[in-house]
Amino acid sequence: MIKIQSLGALLLGVGAAALLATPLMSPAQTGGATAKRKPALMPVYQPPMRGTTVGGRIGGGTRGTAEQPITLSVLAPEHPGLTVNPQPRLYWYLSDTVAVAAELTVIDRRKADPLLELAIAPPIQAGIHTLDLARHGVRLDPGARYEWFVALVVDRQQRSHDIVAGGEVDLVAPPAGLEGRLADAGAAGGAGVYAGAGMWYDAIDSASLRVARNPGDALARAQRAALLEQVGLAHVAAYDRGDKP
Image (cartoon, rainbow, N blue to C red; front, side, top):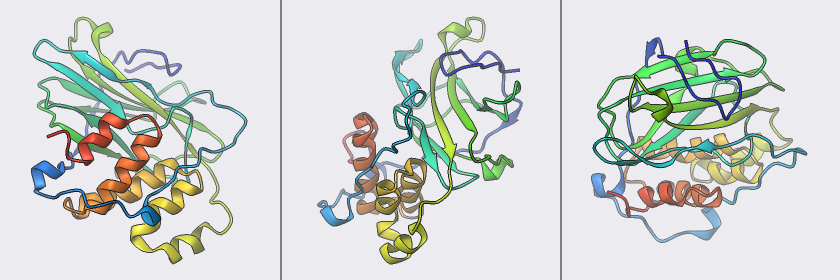
């Protein structure tokens, strides 16, 4: 069983269930090209003012396996990210296809055992992947703090060699007027509305769902890239801008 007590801890177990996760293709793979930016539709993320910056994105970066250097990142800010969705989708990025297994874990800090443990068998494709909590029956409670981790298991005999990235997600009540602003903005403006309200996970999900429906949607990719750059994930933004094959 995976045992994690804090964001700095290592994942030590093997997930029990299999995750069906499909990477989204880059513009180079789909033939789409990033359109010119439309400033009015570019989301501007406003980090929440909640009196604390403890928690948030950890780990990731680039480390080498036996075959190649790998960059693993969760699409999360460097502070606790917010959502109004009790069953959010969580996104993570892998720079290259790997021939090692991955383990995904969701933790409720109030409980000793993980809420969710999943294993992905190799090979795992490069790109942006999603973990849909609704698909696995996981529901968040308001006011609680949840941590989530992705680990590439480079050597099962030496788990200290794992490549680990993680983030924090908190469920909050929708801000006043959010529903009306979303209705006014339409599908293309949803990411911007969520970002302006400080709802990171909903903003990145809004853009990502549009990319998933139409991988050649240059505006959706530009919106997601803009969000990623604002939280220090320029290397993932480069993937959406077509700079990373």
